[in-house]
Length: 488
Ligand code: NAD
Image (cartoon, rainbow, N blue to C red):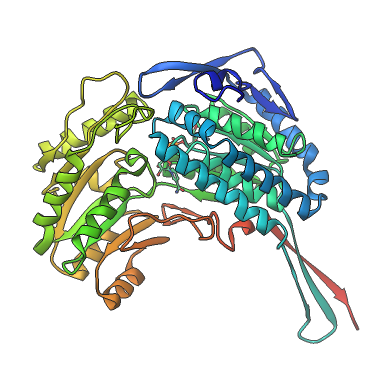
């Protein structure tokens, strides 16, 4: 990444597979194109790993595991800290790459670099705090020593919506714990992972500790890896459908699993809410990452007494936004990731309107190159509508009303998902009572954004199992070993 302006920065990247510390083409020489979603134009061709490459990558990870586990916590911590520093030094390069292959604005991409770097710093600090316990057994005939050790080689599978942060959130705790890895990035956004791997190597990560497999054959590659007894863990971020499949595959070798899956966040606005703050929060919760976030507000539930005012203010803010490439100054909202996603969102909106919803702004695909969709507000959402059941993953706000706290909670919890919920109220008692009863792993209280390296990110119900970040984040990559010492 010597030339700092993409796409020239892209040419300086390896665009190949990283196996055992060396960059190489895929067996058979297959490659696949990476597109700029703002134009639909290809910007690079990347090696397309097959199952033979995958098994080579796992071989490299398994071969490096025992030596890597024996490195000092201080060394692992220094590698993470150096990577953090390099990411921040090269913020513009990384932001440019993220925008190029994913579409979000440069401002949002820069924020993603800082956020990803935050996890590297957090786990640099955690690497030197791995501890155990010592106690006397109940009958005093033994001493009980409990130590923590790395789980072993991990398969990390990441989505395209945060091409730097999602890999960083997994790699950082795995490195801190002493695990080796095979990373399979999303095929839409492999370039940022490649850049991250080069920076980790520059920071001193030994050969074979991180292996990287860009591929269009995710199902075959991951199935081959999951069947191999050398793999000990899978950490996945993506859709609930794929998460379920991986959980089933993981059962054969009884793998450790961490699952960060889909969301369907309710955004509840009580009658006593500060409406200006609620609209600000709604803009963030709905439009951050162009709505393509697992923590995006998916269902707006607004008290009937304030619904009209909230809707008017939200429509006013959303209709004033300008669509444009993430690199354009003055553009507020970039494109969706690809044609399939854009057409899915358009179809969902059309279907909801046909079922009786009212359109306030947006609602039609603009005649632009790339995969843009306008900020859209719908009200009068019919009960049971698909838009309330599925992740929208686009800049579409669907508003329903409620008339009591109980009704709001019943609507909020009427979903298989449980990642995050947003709640706006000025009454502290109501805020706490409702937060306790909301079925989700996270709650944004008078705040339209949750996520912090120092907090446990993750969901309940079909949104997943396991947490990334926080004091317990490293545990996902550690086993406990109990040693009973005879003391008659
Ligand atoms: P996806 O499940 O289609 O793909 C995610 C990853 O899994 C990609 O790398 C993909 O190539 C891979 N994959 C696809 N099929 C596979 C298979 N059969 N076996 C193994 N790997 C396979 O999801 P997506 O469309 O890329 O991402 C969007 C989804 O991710 C949304 O549901 C979103 O909510 C979720 N997500 C969750 C979090 C979280 O932390 N909970 C964060 C970001 C995104």
